[in-house]
Image (cartoon, rainbow, N blue to C red):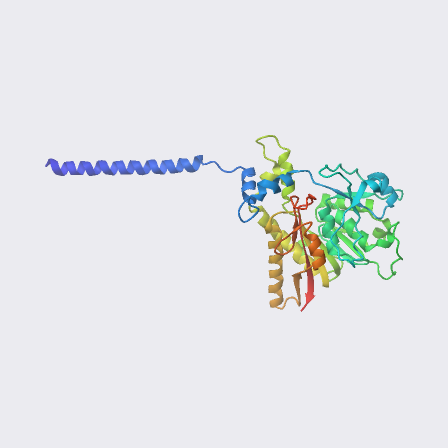
Length: 403
């Protein structure tokens, strides 16, 4: 009688031991998950951009340190102010060096944008440019900006009397650069003949955000001849660029050129904001960032780019640009927008096509001294081998063709 009881006792004891071990394993697993430290926002940021599909070792070795440095600026001369006034504020000509943008030998527009840097000894840090001042004609002398921003406008190749839409224009530096190519005959130092009266040109500078729109308006008033606003040739608009081309004054196909300097994640801004924080604190800009934030931003960017392609005329050009270093906001946006347009054409909703535009062998060879090729365009990064420290800025040019 004892043997069956002993067997039952051993079986019950074994079962209890197994249940106890299983419970301890579950408890240990649960505690491990609870205690497992989660990556901080800064660690997640670094892990994201050092991933094999992104910048790998380059992120920590050169790109992140370059992003953490102060932005390098060039002085864009406002050609609507006399050059002598610019020189008096910024410095004598013999202390400055003009920035040479990639251009074909026969490009008559190559000198439209006059950007200057200091003549420095090798490896000497640039002194900051002074703030702009009023010239003798009442307009501000210059605009301090990253040369990569001027490069994007240069590549768009705006010509006299073009009708141009700057879709996301605040604070206005690129609009100023565009205006100088549309109306060169209004510049005090312009050497050429006046343009034919019938060719007036137009610049529509758009910004949907209220405070940024006011800043844009104030800036263009301070930099552009008053006659342009008075005649209606230069207008500041406050329209939602994601709502399509029909909301803009010239409507679908009404513009010769469109610039989309799209709102973006601006990772350099995040890096600079975090650098100002004391140890252990996280900047608000970084706390709002996540690996999926670029994907959400891209949804708006795609709509803006589609609006631009619908607003430009057949044969016209669109320049898409961001200051983001994320493919999700750069090449991927261009690819998805082109795919969407391709579907619309296949369904018969539109009768035109769009494609990225080659800039020519001569220009692209010079661009390699500024930027790196991507799948759909170019990206200027501050750790570029050329050592100029411009950027970041991604850009590509698209053309609208009838097929």
